[in-house]
Amino acid sequence: MIIPTANRKETEAIIKQAARKVFLQKGLAGARLQEIADEAGIGRTSLHYYYRNKEKLFNAVFSDNFLEIKRRIPYQQEEDLPLEDILIQFTKEYFSNAIKNPELDLFLLNEFCARPESMLNLIKGHEVTQFILQAFEKSIQKGKLKGNAQQHFITFISVTFFPFAAKNMIQQMLQCSEEDYLQYMQSREDYIVGFIEQYFNTQIKK
Amino acid sequence: MIIPTANRKETEAIIKQAARKVFLQKGLAGARLQEIADEAGIGRTSLHYYYRNKEKLFNAVFSDNFLEIKRRIPYQQEEDLPLEDILIQFTKEYFSNAIKNPELDLFLLNEFCARPESMLNLIKGHEVTQFILQAFEKSIQKGKLKGNAQQHFITFISVTFFPFAAKNMIQQMLQCSEEDYLQYMQSREDYIVGFIEQYFNTQIKK
DNA sequence: TTTGCTTTTGACATTTTTGTCAAATACTAT
DNA sequence: ATAGTATTTGACAAAAATGTCAAAAGCAAA
Image (cartoon, rainbow over all chains, first blue to last red; front, side):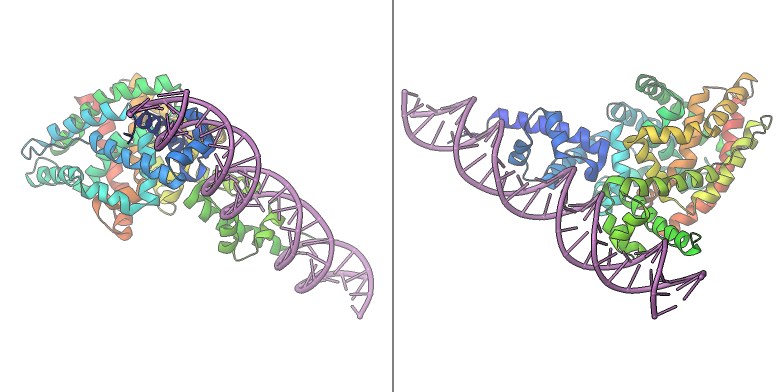
């Protein structure tokens, strides 16, 4: 009798990491098993041994990323925090995770397009979206914020999520290296905090 | 002697339109020539007759989209307009085009990832990026705006570009239909104008 | 209607990518 | 060391997708 050795899990992890890299860069259709194998430093045939086929491999990597996403989107039910605090807290935790994995965001965007159902689960199982949306609504109801909750919500997602999804685009637009980009993203966290304080707070003063 | 009949151009247009649809939906790697042919209502072999191969077809469609994108990104060299006016003008023209073609934005984002080189040309050939970035810089230099030009630039791109790229994601998050989404985008144009006036203008008053 | 061209079509070839299998190798417990 | 299992490998098969070609069909002018 043989226990699935630690080595197996290790290899699986290496493969998934390699696959992840290639999938994120090239997408499901564009990824080549050979490239993944090379990246993992194993023969292509071994890929089939561990994961019968491309789709299975993709799903394996992907369900991992589900978990990663949930980790990345922290959610604390302190209903009564002021809007500002909710947004800032979310931003901070989101950024600290997203900076480690900027590629994931574009991938997500695509999945929402390619496989909406599976993404729906992700959202449904995780109420943070509704929570933030409602935070905007409440703030408006209380007269602390002017305007439309949905639009504010979209704005908030845009300024936090998009810069990661558009990593390559931004690099090209600002004509900067990856290091510069990461630098921008590092300081962007503080920028966003300032943004929240100014924009979602000064609304009423107009 | 025969003049390339009007019919040829027509067929080419039909093919390109079909190809465009499939490419935007599936990306270069994911698109199948057969599907494009079906979509265009012609035999797959004819595709090769008009455009020798997939890449040529892609480029043909794509250079059209280059034009489309350039059309979509209006650029007038009125250097001396105030920042606000520049941004608002850009936003209006951008929105009027983007609403007709939300798919293009996500496609672009992906291409920047998968084929950065070809995207570079698009940007290089069109100075609007630099123009807007510089508009931010000038405004800061003049003391009319506080903060960092790059960050503001990213914010501006985020709130305009992202909501189109994230069409499906937003639909799921707001749990709304496509019509609702388009509705939101319609009214978002005005929202953004308000946003520009408030945020990129009130910065100094803090 | 014939000539000379363009366009379409289907059969086929090629290439690319994925998937299978059995033999070789490595590993582990007895 | 050996048996038994896990893993790797390379040769091969199959499938999927692209690309080529020549013959057929269409069309317009003489």
